[in-house]
Image 1 (cartoon, rainbow, N blue to C red):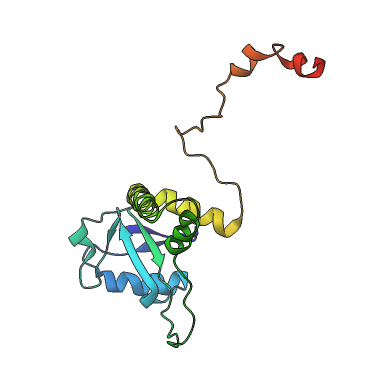
Image 2: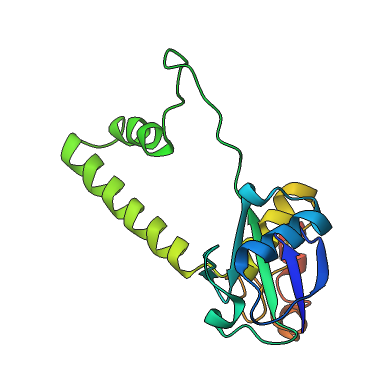
Length: 172
């Protein structure tokens, strides 16, 4: 069977494998074709992380399936005396503390963390891939289908308001 293996940044390849192939062997093939070291690969099928000791058939991966590859960064040893940057929540807490009391600051931070976690849980791999592509290529981010901002106009909205109020600003 053929599988499509896709990196988050858009590179992809087709690999011919059998259902009895191990995930570890698939990682080796991906390493050869896409030049991504095996130890940096996370393979995902339908959002599920594939374990090296399992076989493709264990995950019901069939012909023409698409496998996503996420590269994990190499771990670096950092000297203990190196200054670690403060997390975003720490900086946000400092800003909020200028405007709120200690209890209110904590309450707002807790609500923001919960909302942030909820949004992270709902993000799809496709949206994550689109965001990574945008951040790395600086191309305009396409608006997902069906989602419109509050300022977006429907076709025909502009026709209704044309002529009304446009000249008023110039007269005043």
